[in-house]
Image: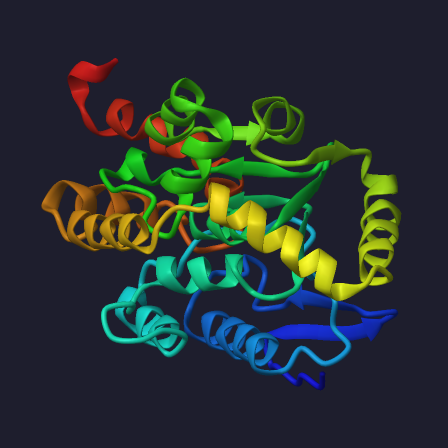
Length: 285
């Protein structure tokens, strides 16, 4: 399968398509990156050719994907809508489609995967992460919103009720070791071993008869993935919550302090959303 995408660098090797997100320092899920992800997934559905496994990683050393582009929600939603039919105009429904793509997908995470970036990783079949460098989080509740692209559905199933509520309502960052212990990811690996481990596993799976691998993925997906109706519901809730005055106030505050810019706030976003009240409310201490 030939792919030429401006914001995703690709190479093929032994049945494995290595797809490296390359959309700036933060790899925001905005118009360009969502457009290219949609094109990639559509091609995998139409004709995967020799592709048996896709490995998604990042060109940025600090961010797998920081989150969605909060300044362009309608625009990236319009790009995501091109992957679905009527009623499926959301990033969540696109990622629901990604989860069912007829090849194995592996997220290899270095740096931060938060919000929609974490939901992109969760839509993959497996997640392996750098023990020293990976951070995971769903920060939306800290701004008054809700994960709207599958995070609630995946985390509730993978972490269980108590830990999912901690992760989503707490809106904090989780290091790779904790994410592994909670069931958020497959494994946390020493950074020096991550590339080799993922490449060996991907090529191992790519060498198996594809019919059996696809059947196994379909069977597991049928047992574990959320219904389209639940994903749509979360997307609608997200779209409504981000327009509320309290949410806009918090997002504007974060924007004034460096949201969506490489720097300290994005690096420590889990802490920043928790600091909002203390910074703005004289009674908060």
